[in-house]
Image (cartoon, rainbow, N blue to C red; front, side, top):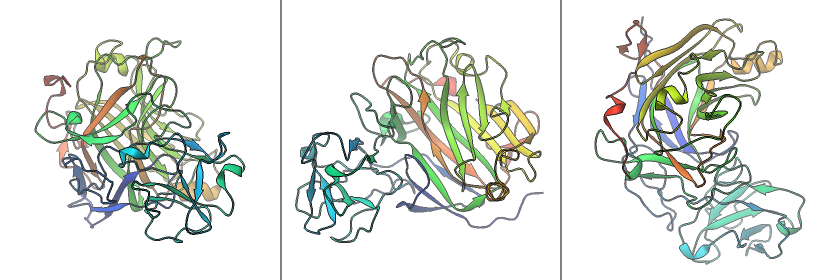
Amino acid sequence: MRTSLTVVYLFIFLILVGSGNMSFAGITFTDGKWETTFDCAEQSQADGTWPDCNDVELGGNWTFYIASLTDGSSNNWTQSTTSNEWYYTGSAFDGANSTKTVIIDTVIQKKVALGSLSAGKYAWGDKDSLGYSTVYVYQTADPDAQAADYIYANGTHGKYVSGDYASSITSSANNPSGSGEGFRKIDGDGGNIYTGPLAVAFPSAQKELWIRWYQRHEDDYVWKTISKGDVPLYDKHVYLATDTQNTAAIAEYHYDTYAIIAQNTPDYYQVTTEAGEGWTGIMNGDESDGLFHCFEIHIKMDTDGTDGIGQIWIDGVLKASEIDVNWSGVDRNTPEEIATAQEGWIFFKLGSNQGSPNNGTSMYVDHDDLSVYNSTPPNKDLQGNPFIGPIWSPRDFKNEN
């Protein structure tokens, strides 16, 4: 029986690590679902405004960079007109472009007034008449002299993506069923080198979700050879988190399978496809085919470590289905952590880290037509399972950008 529907609010924002105290914009589930096609216009952030992006408040042409507070260089930080605030003007930042902005650790805050920061906070803005926005930090002394502390940006865990640093909403990332835009991130060679993912956060924990999205790796995208071939060691697509750091559910390529990881459990890979149904099966070889493919997962939290649900569809075909999944980390977490996890998932990231591309250059990964249900979807697969389902055949389209 379909559950009764309540209006639930979602928030969407860029995130790197954690689920900290971030700025976000509100969107709404309607009849138990929320969807976006990312169809919005590019817009500069030089004036500090945010474009309305089909209910996704995410700016175009985001630029991410990384700077260490103790990178061996002096004069990276200048004291603001407010004594305990410092702003960054180091060599890693090119203010001349005037559209730079930053994602800082787990705290994002638009600087609304001088003196508005409190201890441990970061922000971005232009309140010192620089002519461009930069990052401000709260420090009682020059950040150049502080102990090791890092400002993370572009999602690289301390490394640059060479060339294009931007995650963006752009027409180049559109799923070509129609006009509009999609969400594009950039992957660099090596482990965990990528621009910032998109994240959707729920105002309350969700115990059951269906999530469908379309995804495309740039044509001829390849992976470093590992023990099981030229396949991803991991490539995290959807990263669902509970309100505990020890528990997450991650939909990803794993070697030559597709899986949903159950973190901090005796067996991470509790929901997985058959061998050959991962990268090479989807792409029909070692190299990306440059096509959009449809991914969908259904996930339901366990009550005792034995009755969680996990299902995977790829291009509309059910590839894995388990009804005995331990999502909450029973046997590995404390009773308090288990109870917290079993309240449900509070956010997910779309387009996270990976290991290890081997392209010799940065390459893009596109996402579009994201759909999230917190109640039973109306469609059914060939086995009779409720699912959101694809909206067209992905193999009819190939990217030529």
